[in-house]
Image 1 (cartoon, helix red, strand yellow):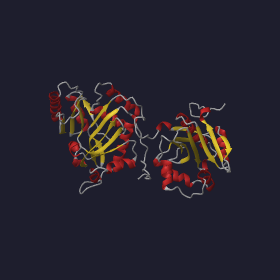
Image 2 (tube, helix red, strand yellow):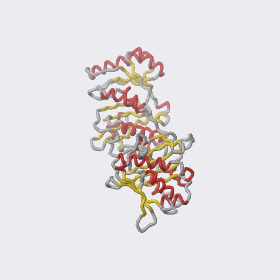
Image 3 (cartoon, rainbow, N blue to C red):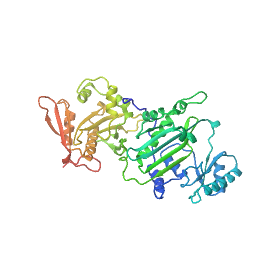
Image 4 (spheres, one colour):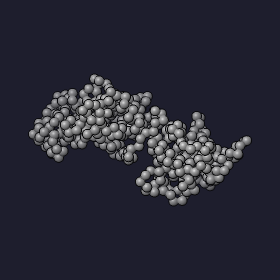
Amino acid sequence: MLKEIPKRFREDLTFDEERARRVLQRGLARPHGMLTEVESKELMEAYGLPITVTRLAHHEDHAVVLARDMGFPVVLKICSPDIVHKTEAGGIVLDVQNEDQVRAAYRTILERARVYKPDAEIHGVSVQPMLRTAQGATGVELIVGAKRDDHFGPVILFGMGGILAELLKDRSLALPPLNRSLAHRLMEDTKVYKVLRGYRNLPPADMASLEELLIRLSQLVTDFPEIVELDMNPVILQHGRPWAVDARVLVRPSSVPSPMHLIISPYPARYEKHAVTTTALPVFVRPIKPEDAPLLVDLFHVLSPTSIYFRFFSPIKELSEDMLARFTQIDYDREIALVAVDASGTAQEKLLGVARVISDPDGKKAEFAVLVGDLWQGKGIGALLLENCLHIAKERGIETVWGTVLRENTQMLALGRKLGFSVCRVPESTDCELTIDLRAVTFDEAGRIQRS
Protein backbone atom coordinates (compact mmCIF):
# COMPACT_ATOMS: atom_id res chain seq x y z
CA MET A 1 0.00 0.00 0.00
CA LEU A 2 2.87 2.39 0.75
CA LYS A 3 4.34 1.76 -2.71
CA GLU A 4 1.03 2.25 -4.53
CA ILE A 5 1.19 4.90 -7.25
CA PRO A 6 -1.96 7.08 -7.30
CA LYS A 7 -3.77 7.39 -10.62
CA ARG A 8 -3.80 10.78 -12.32
CA PHE A 9 -6.92 12.65 -13.34
CA ARG A 10 -7.22 13.41 -17.04
CA GLU A 11 -7.04 17.12 -16.24
CA ASP A 12 -5.51 19.08 -13.40
CA LEU A 13 -8.02 20.16 -10.76
CA THR A 14 -8.58 23.91 -10.52
CA PHE A 15 -10.01 25.97 -7.64
CA ASP A 16 -11.32 29.53 -7.25
CA GLU A 17 -9.68 30.42 -3.96
CA GLU A 18 -10.64 34.12 -4.05
CA ARG A 19 -14.33 33.38 -4.55
CA ALA A 20 -14.28 30.90 -1.69
CA ARG A 21 -12.55 33.43 0.55
CA ARG A 22 -15.25 36.03 -0.14
CA VAL A 23 -17.96 33.57 0.89
CA LEU A 24 -16.11 32.61 4.07
CA GLN A 25 -15.79 36.25 5.09
CA ARG A 26 -19.59 36.51 5.29
CA GLY A 27 -19.71 33.71 7.86
CA LEU A 28 -16.75 35.07 9.81
CA ALA A 29 -18.57 38.40 10.12
CA ARG A 30 -21.45 36.70 11.99
CA PRO A 31 -21.31 35.84 15.70
CA HIS A 32 -22.46 32.25 15.12
CA GLY A 33 -20.23 31.72 12.05
CA MET A 34 -22.85 29.70 10.16
CA LEU A 35 -23.19 29.96 6.39
CA THR A 36 -26.60 29.55 4.80
CA GLU A 37 -27.19 26.63 2.46
CA VAL A 38 -26.93 28.95 -0.54
CA GLU A 39 -23.61 30.35 0.75
CA SER A 40 -22.34 26.87 1.64
CA LYS A 41 -23.04 25.66 -1.88
CA GLU A 42 -21.41 28.74 -3.38
CA LEU A 43 -18.29 27.97 -1.32
CA MET A 44 -18.28 24.38 -2.57
CA GLU A 45 -18.96 25.44 -6.14
CA ALA A 46 -15.82 27.61 -6.02
CA TYR A 47 -13.81 24.41 -5.42
CA GLY A 48 -15.63 22.40 -8.07
CA LEU A 49 -17.63 20.24 -5.67
CA PRO A 50 -20.76 18.88 -7.41
CA ILE A 51 -23.76 20.67 -5.91
CA THR A 52 -27.34 20.95 -7.08
CA VAL A 53 -28.23 24.38 -8.43
CA THR A 54 -29.73 26.34 -5.55
CA ARG A 55 -31.23 29.82 -5.75
CA LEU A 56 -32.57 32.02 -2.96
CA ALA A 57 -36.11 33.40 -3.20
CA HIS A 58 -37.01 36.42 -1.06
CA HIS A 59 -40.77 36.18 -1.66
CA GLU A 60 -43.17 33.64 -3.14
CA ASP A 61 -43.43 35.31 -6.55
CA HIS A 62 -39.63 35.11 -6.81
CA ALA A 63 -39.81 31.43 -5.85
CA VAL A 64 -42.31 30.81 -8.64
CA VAL A 65 -40.02 32.44 -11.22
CA LEU A 66 -37.02 30.40 -10.05
CA ALA A 67 -38.98 27.14 -10.07
CA ARG A 68 -40.33 27.87 -13.57
CA ASP A 69 -36.82 28.51 -14.86
CA MET A 70 -35.43 25.33 -13.27
CA GLY A 71 -38.31 23.14 -14.36
CA PHE A 72 -40.62 21.11 -12.13
CA PRO A 73 -40.49 19.26 -9.84
CA VAL A 74 -38.46 21.32 -7.35
CA VAL A 75 -37.55 21.33 -3.68
CA LEU A 76 -38.07 24.30 -1.34
CA LYS A 77 -36.04 24.74 1.86
CA ILE A 78 -35.83 27.31 4.62
CA CYS A 79 -32.71 29.45 4.36
CA SER A 80 -31.58 30.50 7.82
CA PRO A 81 -28.19 30.34 9.57
CA ASP A 82 -30.08 29.73 12.83
CA ILE A 83 -31.91 26.59 11.61
CA VAL A 84 -29.32 23.88 11.04
CA HIS A 85 -31.58 20.81 10.89
CA LYS A 86 -34.20 21.83 8.36
CA THR A 87 -36.10 18.54 8.55
CA GLU A 88 -36.72 18.90 12.30
CA ALA A 89 -38.10 22.40 11.68
CA GLY A 90 -40.37 21.22 8.88
CA GLY A 91 -38.40 23.53 6.64
CA ILE A 92 -38.27 21.27 3.57
CA VAL A 93 -40.99 20.54 1.03
CA LEU A 94 -40.13 17.95 -1.64
CA ASP A 95 -41.57 17.18 -5.06
CA VAL A 96 -43.27 20.53 -5.67
CA GLN A 97 -45.02 20.06 -9.03
CA ASN A 98 -46.49 23.43 -10.07
CA GLU A 99 -46.65 27.16 -9.36
CA ASP A 100 -49.59 26.90 -6.94
CA GLN A 101 -47.71 24.31 -4.89
CA VAL A 102 -44.65 26.58 -4.87
CA ARG A 103 -46.66 29.41 -3.32
CA ALA A 104 -48.25 27.10 -0.74
CA ALA A 105 -44.91 25.48 0.13
CA TYR A 106 -43.22 28.88 0.50
CA ARG A 107 -45.84 30.08 3.02
CA THR A 108 -45.86 26.76 4.90
CA ILE A 109 -42.09 26.71 5.30
CA LEU A 110 -41.98 30.25 6.70
CA GLU A 111 -44.81 29.50 9.15
CA ARG A 112 -43.12 26.32 10.41
CA ALA A 113 -39.78 28.10 10.79
CA ARG A 114 -41.30 30.88 12.90
CA VAL A 115 -42.97 28.32 15.16
CA TYR A 116 -39.78 26.23 15.44
CA LYS A 117 -37.49 29.18 16.22
CA PRO A 118 -39.31 32.51 16.55
CA ASP A 119 -36.10 34.55 16.77
CA ALA A 120 -34.39 32.89 13.78
CA GLU A 121 -32.78 35.11 11.16
CA ILE A 122 -34.54 34.08 7.94
CA HIS A 123 -32.99 35.01 4.60
CA GLY A 124 -35.77 33.49 2.51
CA VAL A 125 -36.51 30.12 0.92
CA SER A 126 -34.13 28.29 -1.41
CA VAL A 127 -35.30 26.58 -4.59
CA GLN A 128 -33.50 23.67 -6.24
CA PRO A 129 -34.32 20.87 -8.70
CA MET A 130 -35.73 17.62 -7.35
CA LEU A 131 -33.49 14.62 -7.98
CA ARG A 132 -35.50 11.46 -8.51
CA THR A 133 -34.53 7.81 -8.33
CA ALA A 134 -36.49 7.23 -11.52
CA GLN A 135 -34.29 9.72 -13.31
CA GLY A 136 -31.19 7.62 -12.81
CA ALA A 137 -30.28 7.94 -9.11
CA THR A 138 -29.21 4.71 -7.39
CA GLY A 139 -31.26 5.36 -4.26
CA VAL A 140 -28.06 5.52 -2.17
CA GLU A 141 -27.58 8.57 0.01
CA LEU A 142 -24.11 9.47 1.22
CA ILE A 143 -22.66 11.89 3.72
CA VAL A 144 -19.38 13.65 3.00
CA GLY A 145 -17.91 16.20 5.35
CA ALA A 146 -15.07 17.50 7.45
CA LYS A 147 -14.52 18.64 11.01
CA ARG A 148 -11.62 20.51 12.59
CA ASP A 149 -10.07 18.57 15.46
CA ASP A 150 -8.05 20.43 18.10
CA HIS A 151 -5.12 18.01 17.80
CA PHE A 152 -5.28 16.58 14.27
CA GLY A 153 -6.65 19.53 12.33
CA PRO A 154 -9.32 18.84 9.67
CA VAL A 155 -10.62 15.28 9.43
CA ILE A 156 -12.50 14.05 6.33
CA LEU A 157 -15.65 11.91 6.78
CA PHE A 158 -17.35 9.61 4.26
CA GLY A 159 -20.25 7.21 4.78
CA MET A 160 -23.92 6.43 4.46
CA GLY A 161 -25.99 9.60 4.59
CA GLY A 162 -29.58 10.76 4.76
CA ILE A 163 -31.72 10.47 7.85
CA LEU A 164 -30.03 7.16 8.77
CA ALA A 165 -26.55 8.68 9.04
CA GLU A 166 -26.68 9.14 12.82
CA LEU A 167 -28.47 5.84 13.41
CA LEU A 168 -26.29 3.44 11.40
CA LYS A 169 -22.99 5.31 11.80
CA ASP A 170 -21.52 3.68 8.69
CA ARG A 171 -18.63 6.05 8.18
CA SER A 172 -14.85 6.26 7.85
CA LEU A 173 -12.32 8.99 8.56
CA ALA A 174 -9.13 10.21 6.90
CA LEU A 175 -6.63 13.01 7.31
CA PRO A 176 -5.98 15.40 4.43
CA PRO A 177 -4.29 15.83 2.06
CA LEU A 178 -5.89 13.09 -0.06
CA ASN A 179 -4.93 11.62 -3.40
CA ARG A 180 -6.97 9.17 -5.46
CA SER A 181 -5.61 6.08 -3.68
CA LEU A 182 -6.31 7.52 -0.23
CA ALA A 183 -9.77 8.73 -1.28
CA HIS A 184 -10.65 5.28 -2.61
CA ARG A 185 -9.34 3.63 0.54
CA LEU A 186 -11.54 5.96 2.60
CA MET A 187 -14.61 4.71 0.72
CA GLU A 188 -13.54 1.06 0.98
CA ASP A 189 -13.64 1.30 4.77
CA THR A 190 -17.46 1.63 4.76
CA LYS A 191 -20.27 -0.90 4.30
CA VAL A 192 -21.98 1.30 1.71
CA TYR A 193 -18.93 0.85 -0.54
CA LYS A 194 -20.24 -2.60 -1.53
CA VAL A 195 -23.40 -0.93 -2.82
CA LEU A 196 -21.38 1.73 -4.65
CA ARG A 197 -19.56 -1.00 -6.59
CA GLY A 198 -22.94 -2.22 -7.89
CA TYR A 199 -25.34 -4.52 -6.10
CA ARG A 200 -28.09 -6.60 -7.74
CA ASN A 201 -30.16 -4.14 -9.77
CA LEU A 202 -28.24 -1.08 -8.51
CA PRO A 203 -25.67 0.18 -11.04
CA PRO A 204 -22.11 0.96 -9.89
CA ALA A 205 -21.19 4.50 -8.96
CA ASP A 206 -18.67 6.59 -10.87
CA MET A 207 -15.73 5.99 -8.53
CA ALA A 208 -13.49 8.55 -10.23
CA SER A 209 -16.12 11.26 -9.59
CA LEU A 210 -16.39 10.26 -5.93
CA GLU A 211 -12.60 10.29 -5.58
CA GLU A 212 -12.49 13.75 -7.16
CA LEU A 213 -15.18 15.01 -4.76
CA LEU A 214 -13.13 13.87 -1.77
CA ILE A 215 -9.92 15.36 -3.13
CA ARG A 216 -11.60 18.71 -3.84
CA LEU A 217 -13.03 18.72 -0.30
CA SER A 218 -9.59 17.89 1.05
CA GLN A 219 -8.12 20.86 -0.81
CA LEU A 220 -10.87 23.17 0.48
CA VAL A 221 -10.21 22.39 4.16
CA THR A 222 -6.46 22.51 3.47
CA ASP A 223 -6.65 26.03 2.07
CA PHE A 224 -9.03 27.38 4.72
CA PRO A 225 -8.32 26.50 8.38
CA GLU A 226 -11.34 28.69 9.28
CA ILE A 227 -13.68 25.83 8.31
CA VAL A 228 -14.72 24.19 11.59
CA GLU A 229 -17.48 21.92 10.25
CA LEU A 230 -18.66 21.07 6.75
CA ASP A 231 -21.44 18.63 5.86
CA MET A 232 -22.82 17.54 2.52
CA ASN A 233 -25.81 15.40 3.48
CA PRO A 234 -27.31 13.85 1.55
CA VAL A 235 -25.08 13.36 -1.46
CA ILE A 236 -27.21 11.60 -4.08
CA LEU A 237 -25.88 9.60 -7.01
CA GLN A 238 -27.45 10.61 -10.31
CA HIS A 239 -26.42 8.34 -13.22
CA GLY A 240 -23.53 7.24 -11.00
CA ARG A 241 -22.23 10.77 -10.36
CA PRO A 242 -22.49 12.42 -6.91
CA TRP A 243 -24.49 15.58 -6.25
CA ALA A 244 -24.65 17.38 -2.90
CA VAL A 245 -28.32 18.09 -2.28
CA ASP A 246 -27.87 19.83 1.08
CA ALA A 247 -24.87 21.57 2.58
CA ARG A 248 -23.86 23.18 5.85
CA VAL A 249 -20.66 25.03 6.79
CA LEU A 250 -19.56 26.49 10.13
CA VAL A 251 -16.57 28.83 10.22
CA ARG A 252 -14.49 30.40 12.99
CA PRO A 253 -11.35 32.57 12.92
CA SER A 254 -8.12 30.54 12.96
CA SER A 255 -4.92 31.55 14.71
CA VAL A 256 -2.93 29.09 12.58
CA PRO A 257 -2.39 29.84 8.88
CA SER A 258 -2.65 27.25 6.11
CA PRO A 259 -1.10 24.71 5.84
CA MET A 260 0.25 24.73 9.41
CA HIS A 261 -3.15 23.57 10.72
CA LEU A 262 -2.64 20.14 9.10
CA ILE A 263 -0.90 17.27 10.86
CA ILE A 264 0.38 16.00 7.47
CA SER A 265 2.07 18.51 5.18
CA PRO A 266 0.23 18.92 1.86
CA TYR A 267 1.60 19.41 -1.62
CA PRO A 268 3.35 22.84 -1.42
CA ALA A 269 1.68 24.60 -4.34
CA ARG A 270 3.37 27.86 -3.34
CA TYR A 271 6.58 26.60 -4.95
CA GLU A 272 5.01 26.32 -8.39
CA LYS A 273 6.30 28.81 -10.95
CA HIS A 274 6.66 29.36 -14.68
CA ALA A 275 10.23 30.15 -15.69
CA VAL A 276 12.53 30.48 -18.67
CA THR A 277 16.01 28.96 -18.63
CA THR A 278 19.16 30.83 -19.66
CA THR A 279 18.73 29.31 -23.13
CA ALA A 280 15.15 30.67 -23.45
CA LEU A 281 13.49 27.29 -22.81
CA PRO A 282 10.04 27.72 -21.13
CA VAL A 283 9.46 25.33 -18.23
CA PHE A 284 7.01 24.88 -15.38
CA VAL A 285 8.81 24.26 -12.09
CA ARG A 286 6.83 22.52 -9.36
CA PRO A 287 7.26 20.09 -6.45
CA ILE A 288 7.17 16.43 -7.34
CA LYS A 289 3.93 14.47 -6.79
CA PRO A 290 3.25 10.77 -6.15
CA GLU A 291 1.38 10.73 -9.48
CA ASP A 292 4.63 11.65 -11.26
CA ALA A 293 5.99 8.10 -11.03
CA PRO A 294 5.13 7.19 -14.68
CA LEU A 295 6.65 10.47 -15.86
CA LEU A 296 9.82 9.75 -13.90
CA VAL A 297 10.04 6.35 -15.60
CA ASP A 298 9.73 8.07 -18.99
CA LEU A 299 12.53 10.46 -18.04
CA PHE A 300 14.73 7.56 -16.94
CA HIS A 301 14.24 5.84 -20.30
CA VAL A 302 15.77 8.79 -22.22
CA LEU A 303 18.91 8.80 -20.06
CA SER A 304 22.15 7.50 -21.45
CA PRO A 305 24.10 4.88 -19.44
CA THR A 306 26.60 7.61 -18.56
CA SER A 307 23.88 9.93 -17.15
CA ILE A 308 22.44 7.05 -15.14
CA TYR A 309 25.87 6.23 -13.70
CA PHE A 310 26.58 9.88 -12.85
CA ARG A 311 23.29 10.15 -10.92
CA PHE A 312 22.98 6.72 -9.25
CA PHE A 313 26.68 5.70 -9.10
CA SER A 314 25.73 2.30 -10.55
CA PRO A 315 24.56 1.01 -13.95
CA ILE A 316 20.89 0.35 -13.07
CA LYS A 317 18.53 -0.63 -15.88
CA GLU A 318 15.15 0.22 -14.36
CA LEU A 319 13.69 2.18 -11.45
CA SER A 320 12.21 -0.34 -9.02
CA GLU A 321 8.87 0.18 -7.29
CA ASP A 322 10.76 0.93 -4.08
CA MET A 323 12.80 3.61 -5.82
CA LEU A 324 9.76 5.17 -7.51
CA ALA A 325 7.93 5.37 -4.19
CA ARG A 326 11.01 6.81 -2.52
CA PHE A 327 11.55 9.45 -5.20
CA THR A 328 7.93 10.58 -5.68
CA GLN A 329 6.16 10.02 -2.34
CA ILE A 330 8.24 12.38 -0.27
CA ASP A 331 7.87 14.03 3.12
CA TYR A 332 7.44 17.67 2.09
CA ASP A 333 8.67 18.77 5.53
CA ARG A 334 12.06 17.06 5.24
CA GLU A 335 12.69 16.91 1.52
CA ILE A 336 12.62 19.40 -1.34
CA ALA A 337 12.13 17.84 -4.77
CA LEU A 338 11.38 20.04 -7.78
CA VAL A 339 10.68 18.93 -11.34
CA ALA A 340 10.90 20.90 -14.57
CA VAL A 341 7.95 20.24 -16.87
CA ASP A 342 8.04 21.07 -20.56
CA ALA A 343 5.99 24.27 -20.99
CA SER A 344 6.48 24.69 -24.73
CA GLY A 345 2.85 23.82 -25.45
CA THR A 346 3.05 20.06 -26.01
CA ALA A 347 -0.14 18.19 -25.18
CA GLN A 348 1.51 15.45 -23.11
CA GLU A 349 3.15 16.34 -19.80
CA LYS A 350 6.86 15.58 -19.83
CA LEU A 351 9.53 15.82 -17.13
CA LEU A 352 12.81 17.36 -18.29
CA GLY A 353 14.70 17.16 -15.01
CA VAL A 354 14.53 16.68 -11.24
CA ALA A 355 16.49 18.24 -8.38
CA ARG A 356 16.15 17.48 -4.68
CA VAL A 357 17.56 18.54 -1.33
CA ILE A 358 17.16 16.01 1.50
CA SER A 359 17.49 17.35 5.03
CA ASP A 360 19.38 15.65 7.85
CA PRO A 361 17.37 15.09 11.08
CA ASP A 362 18.86 18.22 12.64
CA GLY A 363 17.45 20.39 9.85
CA LYS A 364 20.76 22.22 9.43
CA LYS A 365 22.54 20.11 6.83
CA ALA A 366 21.17 18.58 3.64
CA GLU A 367 22.29 16.59 0.59
CA PHE A 368 21.42 17.56 -3.00
CA ALA A 369 21.01 15.58 -6.23
CA VAL A 370 20.22 16.68 -9.79
CA LEU A 371 19.05 14.69 -12.83
CA VAL A 372 18.38 16.15 -16.30
CA GLY A 373 17.44 14.18 -19.41
CA ASP A 374 20.19 13.92 -22.02
CA LEU A 375 18.14 15.77 -24.62
CA TRP A 376 17.87 18.82 -22.36
CA GLN A 377 21.31 18.94 -20.75
CA GLY A 378 23.23 22.17 -21.18
CA LYS A 379 20.04 24.25 -21.47
CA GLY A 380 20.06 25.67 -17.94
CA ILE A 381 17.46 23.29 -16.47
CA GLY A 382 19.72 21.81 -13.79
CA ALA A 383 20.87 25.25 -12.65
CA LEU A 384 17.29 26.53 -12.49
CA LEU A 385 16.06 23.56 -10.45
CA LEU A 386 18.97 23.45 -8.02
CA GLU A 387 18.90 27.21 -7.49
CA ASN A 388 15.21 27.06 -6.56
CA CYS A 389 15.86 24.12 -4.23
CA LEU A 390 18.60 26.08 -2.48
CA HIS A 391 16.30 29.08 -2.10
CA ILE A 392 13.66 26.92 -0.39
CA ALA A 393 16.34 25.29 1.77
CA LYS A 394 17.53 28.69 3.01
CA GLU A 395 13.92 29.66 3.81
CA ARG A 396 13.66 26.53 5.97
CA GLY A 397 16.79 27.34 7.93
CA ILE A 398 19.11 24.79 6.32
CA GLU A 399 22.68 26.08 6.64
CA THR A 400 24.82 23.70 4.57
CA VAL A 401 24.00 21.77 1.40
CA TRP A 402 26.41 19.18 0.03
CA GLY A 403 26.56 16.47 -2.59
CA THR A 404 28.94 13.85 -3.95
CA VAL A 405 29.83 14.12 -7.64
CA LEU A 406 31.95 11.79 -9.73
CA ARG A 407 35.17 13.34 -11.00
CA GLU A 408 34.12 12.52 -14.61
CA ASN A 409 30.87 14.48 -14.23
CA THR A 410 32.42 17.74 -15.44
CA GLN A 411 29.05 19.38 -16.21
CA MET A 412 27.83 18.96 -12.64
CA LEU A 413 31.13 20.21 -11.24
CA ALA A 414 30.92 23.29 -13.47
CA LEU A 415 27.33 23.90 -12.39
CA GLY A 416 28.32 23.66 -8.72
CA ARG A 417 31.10 26.20 -9.14
CA LYS A 418 28.74 28.52 -11.05
CA LEU A 419 26.24 28.48 -8.15
CA GLY A 420 28.93 29.09 -5.53
CA PHE A 421 29.68 25.57 -4.28
CA SER A 422 33.18 24.80 -3.09
CA VAL A 423 34.70 21.66 -4.62
CA CYS A 424 37.09 19.33 -2.82
CA ARG A 425 38.30 15.77 -3.33
CA VAL A 426 36.81 13.12 -1.05
CA PRO A 427 39.67 11.56 1.00
CA GLU A 428 40.78 8.13 -0.28
CA SER A 429 38.44 8.45 -3.29
CA THR A 430 38.34 9.92 -6.76
CA ASP A 431 34.92 11.44 -6.05
CA CYS A 432 34.39 15.13 -5.36
CA GLU A 433 32.25 16.77 -2.71
CA LEU A 434 30.40 20.02 -3.43
CA THR A 435 29.45 22.18 -0.44
CA ILE A 436 27.70 25.52 -0.09
CA ASP A 437 27.12 27.60 3.05
CA LEU A 438 23.63 29.08 2.58
CA ARG A 439 24.19 31.51 5.45
CA ALA A 440 26.50 33.43 3.13
CA VAL A 441 24.15 33.28 0.12
CA THR A 442 21.48 35.85 -0.78
CA PHE A 443 18.64 35.42 -3.26
CA ASP A 444 16.65 37.93 -5.30
CA GLU A 445 12.83 38.03 -5.45
CA ALA A 446 12.81 35.47 -8.29
CA GLY A 447 14.75 32.97 -6.14
CA ARG A 448 18.00 33.41 -8.08
CA ILE A 449 21.35 33.58 -6.29
CA GLN A 450 22.68 37.13 -6.20
CA ARG A 451 26.30 37.18 -7.27
CA SER A 452 28.66 39.95 -6.28
